[in-house]
Image (cartoon, rainbow, N blue to C red; front, side, top):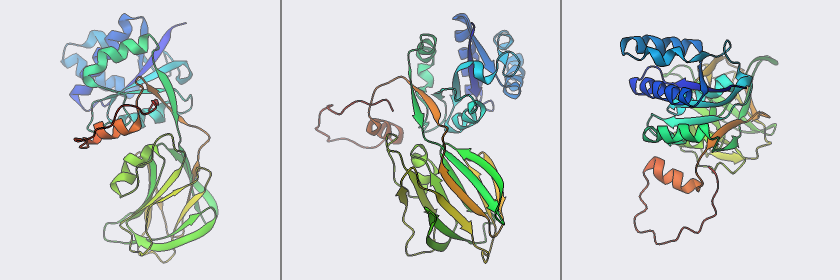
Amino acid sequence: MSRNVLLVSHVRREEALLATIETARLLAAEGIRPIMVDVERDDLARWAAANDHSDAVKGIGLLGVDAHVADLELAVVLGGDGTILKAAEVVREANTPLLGINLGHVGFLAESERDGLHDAVQRVVAKDYVVKERLTLDVTVEVDGKVVYSTWALNECTVEKSAAEKMLSVVVEVDQRPLSSFGADGIVMSTPTGSTAYAFSAGGPVVWPSVEALLLVPISAHALFSRPLVVSPSSLLAVEVAQDSSGNGVLWCDGRRTTPLPRGARVEVRRSEASVRLARFRQGVFTDRLVAKFALPVAGWRGTNRGADEVL
């Protein structure tokens, strides 16, 4: 049975296109068929034709034609965290593991950097990796008591004001009990994975991936009590856009899926039964990843490497 590996690329960046061509060639040389979605392969083919790389594109199969999502053993993602979120959307129905090659800035979800691409492909060929599951969110929107929109998120969902000049008035609920009402620019509801993304920028805590929890972080709230909250993974979070809000809202999930929120709309967020699976190579502690990704100063530390290893 042939081995199929999905390639998901940031096709608007030349560095990513070059890395995709290189990865496709390396996989094909090992008897593994690279697969891409049609739109991305078309973009790659146009660029390759203008840059003398058409031979590599000919060997790339089409998802849904040459292989289906259930036929994929892995998705190799060439880009930043945004590209990984895009890939998670593509393979969600089959829960295919994702392996990120960071070509972005921080690249918190990625496992390897660009200069480690060749080694990463060899690890893929040898199936020399472990798979870790990350908690995700199920998100529903109700208007007048009826569900009008359903989606999911790996990092976070945000309820935001739809107009810059208008304040959004919201009521926050935890476990079907009202917590507080206030005006704000928005509310971030996040997973531990997303705690280093939008929630982090909004002033939320960093939560270690091994901790199962949900986060709620207000954005620029006009309230005495507007602290970030960390609640049980079994909790139900809800945000309602107040009927007397000066403006409407908008829901964003992972910065990719969106729907408008009229006054009176209710957004419910709970832990999803489906996870996202990330392929990992290294053993290490999450503290080291934080230090590396955020370039944190640790000069003067005199401890020893006695911490228990975990796959991040």
